[in-house]
Amino acid sequence: MHMESLLVSTTVGASLWGVSGATLGLAAPRIDKAKIPLTLGAGAFVFGAQMMNCAIPATGASGHLVGAVLLTALVGPCAAFAAMAAILAVQCLGFNDGGFLAYGANLFNMGLIGCLCGALAFRGKARTPLMTMTLALAASLAAVVLGALAVCAEVWLSGVSTLRMGDFLAAMVPIHLAIGLGEGLLTGIILVAAQAKAFSWKTLTATFALCAVLIVFGLSHTASAKPDGLEWSLARAELRQ
Image (cartoon, rainbow, N blue to C red; front, side, top):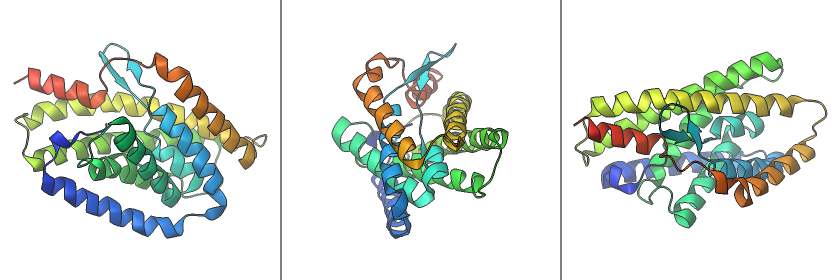
């Protein structure tokens, strides 16, 4: 769901830079310092997982983990938002994934919305594995679909595209429902595993870091070459004109 700068106007891009920047400024002092190691480990895992586009059957599209709900459930919304800000900054500046002008929009769509959904879902402490899985599915679906709707709204407000917004919405929502379902299942499985008493926080941090290394230096080479949900939706909306 990484937006490129061509999709947003200077006004919309700058406004969302302001919103996301102000939110980061409020969140940073509230980070639980005891969870910084886990935040780094889980953040590295999410960074690697975002490089792994997986094909969505019968669509010709692909999707990847966003990770904001997962991070929020593990370390809280403030640390999760800071981690998402760092992940998206590295992708933007180091990998040219998402434009600089669109960075604020991407952080809003993938970070702020996802962290808010995760915070609402995982406010309590004690929960059964079934409840954890259900909350992960609901929060992930909400985060991904609301993020997709935010993309559509930002493109429409920018007025830089000739896309018919009805066609864009018709393509974006169903494909991101599928992506959200996959994210919810993966998030739920990880969180249920993290709840197991056999996993200490140190073990969990090390596991996330190891998985990140394996994904970045190994599995990322097998990522699907099919367009991601946003690219696929843009192409379908353009073809319908």
